[in-house]
Every structure is written in C-alpha cells, then in structure tokens.
Image (tube, helix red, strand yellow):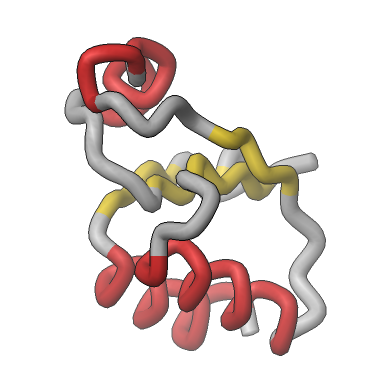
Length: 79
C-alpha cells in the first residue's frame, strides 16, 4: 500500500483526513499511534515530529503533517 496515515483515535483532525481519503475512494493503511507525544517514536522517525495526522505517500515520495495541508494534497494529487 503506498498511502499510510498515522493517526490518533478520537483526533478530529485525523478524522477529517480519514473522511477525505474515504470520500475519494483512496486505499490507505492506518497506523494508530499512542496518545502520549513522548510515545510516538515511529511518527517522529518518519516525519521528524510527533504530531498527527501524518500522511505518507510512498509512490510519490511525500511525507506531510498538518491536516489542512494533507487535505489540500488529497484534493490536488490523489482525488
């Protein structure tokens, strides 16, 4: 799978990204992260920071954070 979304259960920003991916019929894998920032080592490893959501598009070599930027990317590049 070329799209991976790092998300936190119950995060409204993550839910917006999930909805956009689903609404556009985009296949993706979700990696659920820990609630504590200090436990999000994998997110930091892939994105350089511990916040979520983080979207990784392996096919295009894109890694990005911040839901608004991700939503723009989904609309412009994946939809």
